Each structure stands twice: as C-alpha cells, then as structure tokens.
Amino acid sequence: MQIENLVLLMVEAVFYFVFMAAILHMRHRIGIGVFVATLGVMHFLETYLAAVFYIQLPFGVISPGSSVLFSGKLMLILLLYVKEDAAVVRAPIYGLLAGNFLTVGLSQFLRHHETIGAVPGRLADLAFVDEMGWLMLWGTVLLYIDSIAIILLYERLGRRLRGNMAARFLLSGVAVLTFDQIGFYTALHLINGVSLKVFWGGWIAKMLAAVLFAVMISTYLRFSRLSPAEASARPIADIFNDLTFRERYEDLLDRSGRDALTGVLDRSRLETEAERVLTAARTAGRPVALLMVDADDFKEVNDRFGHLAGDTALRQIADCLAKTVREQDLLFRFGGEEFLILCDNLSPEAAFARAEVLRQTVADALRRPDGLPITVSIGVAAGPADGKALADLIAVADARLYRAKKGGRNRVVAADEILPSAL
Image (cartoon, rainbow, N blue to C red; front, top):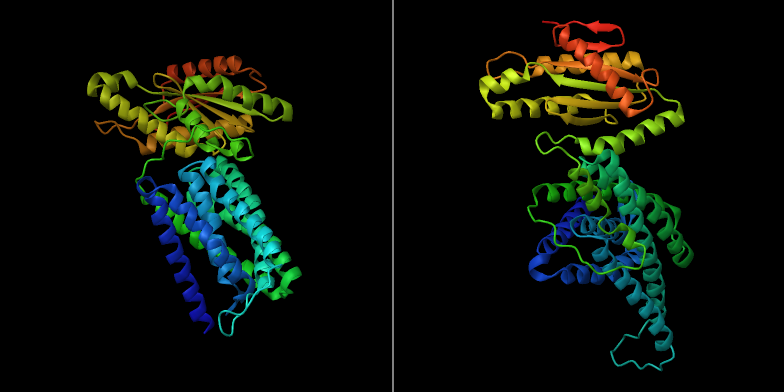
C-alpha cells in the first residue's frame, strides 16, 4: 500500500503541474488572472490537507497538501517569474495574504452569531474555520518569504549555472522547501501537536517533489516556444521592485556586450571586466594572466575560400576556446582574428600550460576547407610581473604573440619560453 501511495502521489504531482503549466502557457489567450485565481483557490485545499490528511510512504508519514501542492505552488511561482516578471509574481502572493487576513477577521465576527441546525446532523465548526484561517495566514507569510528567497537564489545560481536550468530550479527548490518545512511544521506542531515523524517524512517528500518539479519545469521550458510577454511598466514600491526584470536585464546586458559573429565578449566589455578582475587580483594578491590568441594564416583562408569561410573559422575558433577555458576565465574578441583570454588566479607556469592546451586543442579539432589544420599562436603575459594595468599586459602579450608568429606560428610564447609547433 505504501508503494501505491507513492505512485499515486507522483501521478498527482504530474497532473497538478501539467494542468497549471497549461493554464500558464495559455496566459496570453485566456489571461494571467486564470492562473493566479487557480493558485488562490488551491490554497485552502493545500492547508486543509497539510493539517489533517496524511498518508504512509516507505520513508515516513506525509501530507500531499504540503509535499505536492505547496511544493508545486512555490516552483510554479518561480516558473511564473521566469516567464513573466516579479510584478506579476506579487499578485497571487498579495492576493492570498489579503484573503487570509479577511478569513481570520471575518471568523472573529462569525463566532458571535447564534447559529441554528438547519441542516440535519450538521453544525458549523467555527473553531475549525478559525484554525484553518490562522494556518493559511501563516502559510501565506511563509510563501511570501519563500518566493523572495527562491527568486533571489535562482538568480544567484544563474551566475554559475546559467546554462543548466534544471539544476537552478532544483537547488533553489531544495533550499527553500527545507526552510518552509521547518516553518510550517512548527505551526502544525504548536496548533495540532503533529509528531516529529511528520516533519522528516514531509521533508523527504518535498525533496523528491523538488526533483520532480525541476525536471518537469525544465522540460517545459526547453520545449516551450512562447515568447516572453511584454513587461508591465507599472512602478512597484515594494521588495519585488528590486526583483523585477533583474535577470532579464542582466541577460540583455550580457548579450549587448557580445561579439555578433562569435558570441564571445566584445571589446566594449574588455575595459570594465578586466578592471574588475585586475583590481580584485591586486587586492587579494593573486596572480593573473592575459593570453592573446591569433589565428594563423587567416588572410589566406579569406583569400582562398572567401570571407564566409573565414567567418566560419572564427566562430569555430571562438567555440573551441570557450569550451576549453576555465569557467571563471573571460574570453574576448579583441579585433579581426585576435582573441584575449583573461585568467584570474593563474600562475605564470599554469598560464603557459593553459595556453599550450588551447593551442593544441584548436590544432587537433579544427580544419580548413582544404583539410589542413586551423592553428593559433599565443602570447602570454603574467601579472603582476609583466604589469598591473590592462594596457601593460596587452602590450607584453602582443609582443610575445609577434615572436610566436615570427618563430613559425602555431606556437606559445611566454617570457623567454617558446613552445614549437607539434606539426
């Protein structure tokens, strides 16, 4: 029976997500209010189930209201933020807060009525309404905190996991749902005396729900072809104002400073990014390296095979370099067929070895239309020995690149060292 409960719980999660995602997907046709209202309607059921409805699973006792419905709501709010903006996200949260305050307030008046038994065998249970009102209010306060936290965490993770949507949703969900489980269990324990086994079973279930919802959301985003809606221009005077469009703005800023042909950072970003890295390295006393990379015989490729072939070669070189550098390294197109790679916390010896890896990778992986290998020459400057300012490092790297070219190309020159071609 426990396994059947687990399977049924997963089916419920999938059904819930598919239904809600379909409404969100059609928001431009039916209006975002349908999605927001559906979230609000579900809040009572979530709280009711979390308070009184429990099932036994192989790893503990859990409530579908908390493990499936609330976990799904929080992950859907993050999805709503990704598809829209924080101005839209605040609507269901503030709506729930207002509705639950109203519930608690009205229950104080309703308890003073003198009721009659108009329905045989049934009487109004105002104590239950009052209890549910306070639980829903507490749950919505947690939801407000959770929503801000999960959006901020999602954005912070984007700095390192921008290309891994599933991991960002998963890690954000795991962290915030853990906090939520502690907060909501505390209320359940104080109001209803719920035992500790419910906490551990519910926590494990929420972690599994985070995995399932992260997979479903990333799959939906991968195959969704809807363009983002135009953002609201209304001013927002609360915490969500700081969240609205932040990631979209950063993404736009990132794309606006990229080379149109190769997709790597362009020269306009060099001064600001390089100054940031060099200042941080000087402050921390870390070494820094600058690699100047130049495609060998590039003019011959353009002359013999045309500029389209030359553009293709540049894109291939940029892709190869981007895949080979470290995650924290910055790759710029400096001009023409030249690229700069700025490497923080890389010693002169490590910089020389890294440049050789880059040179060899390009030579092994890329070919011209006539089948000959595409090669690069690299000049390496190491700070602070070769200079502390960007201009000084560029001048040294350029001089060493010139030596590599004069020495026969397909070479790395760093200080007095020259690595000859493997050809």
